[in-house]
Amino acid sequence: MGAFAFSAFYLINTTLWELALTMSVWQRVATVIASITVMLTWLIVYHHLWERKTHLPPQERDLTGLFNASTVITLTIGLVFGYLALFVLNLIATFLVFTPEVFRQYAGPEPGLAEHLIVALITTAAATVAGAIGSGFESEESVREAAYSFRERERRQALQRSRATEPEDETLTQTARDA
Image (cartoon, rainbow, N blue to C red; front, side, top):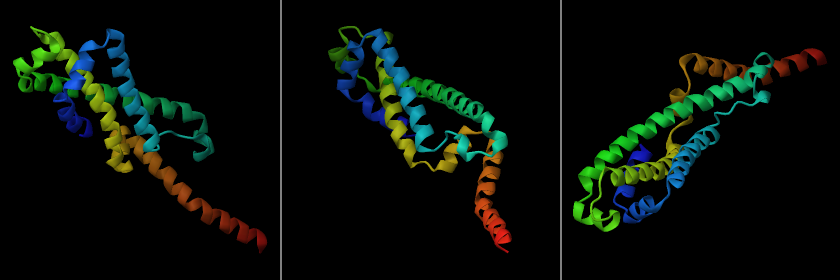
């Protein structure tokens, strides 16, 4: 939702139009990839989605790489589809919002579909980066529900329950030894 809200701001920002229209193809591709990577990294780091071997029971430590890879792949797929959906909305908005007279000043005498595509693409990239920061307002639980399957959430909840009972078990063991 944060990315969608920022899109409105960026769509009416003529500096972004100029920037988008003067970028090379490679700069545009790098911008799109970087925006998705920033969002992916932000979600994983800020919401503690990266598994560490030390936080897992011994029988699951060998699976850490698999857990982390599945997190990255799942989030990447979700972010790419979210990016595409936002791109389509931004493209539609460019045709609804941009008046031909004003857009011609920045895009040339006869702006066509290509210019609208380019501006929508860079608007979506900028909004995605802003949306990454906006995701910080989401609770960790809601992000985990979106990122993980039901089975994975069950596994994580069981792990949290086992961590919560560990200190008690250690205290009981120590008390038994002292007795």
